Image 1 (cartoon, helix red, strand yellow):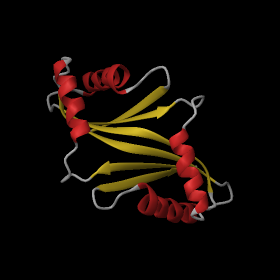
Image 2 (cartoon, rainbow over the protein chains, first blue to last red):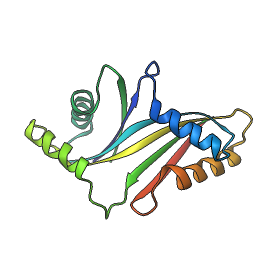
Image 3 (cartoon, chains in turn red, green):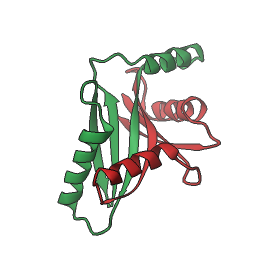
Image 4 (tube, chains in turn blue, cyan):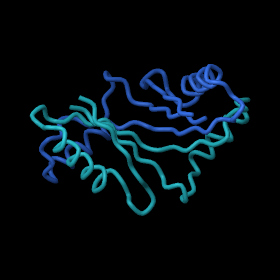
Length: 81
Length: 81
């Protein structure tokens, strides 16, 4: 089973990296970009024996306790079998 | 319209950051993690007037030309209205 975890900065937190990309895109002529924010993406391969409920619990715990800084970041995840 | 772009290292490229997270997780007792790879995640807000085909073309071009290093990375994206 595989899990995909997306970690992004909270809406209220400034994202200077995203802003830099945004202004670079504007200078390069991409007019249709209104906003861009950068985050992190993790692909986790889980052991085969795990059922879906256990996998969900494990991934949620890993995302919350290890991959995310709860002060400034939030996460979401998807499981794929 | 919003686009989500995922950039990850090609399978053939070593991912030391992912390996570090993996061994940290193992030490912390998460036994079910077999592999973990880290990538980047971008959330792009596009101008409202754009139709789906144009948005797809624009995002694909941005991902290919700006957000990805084609030597070591690959990307995928999704559009959400």
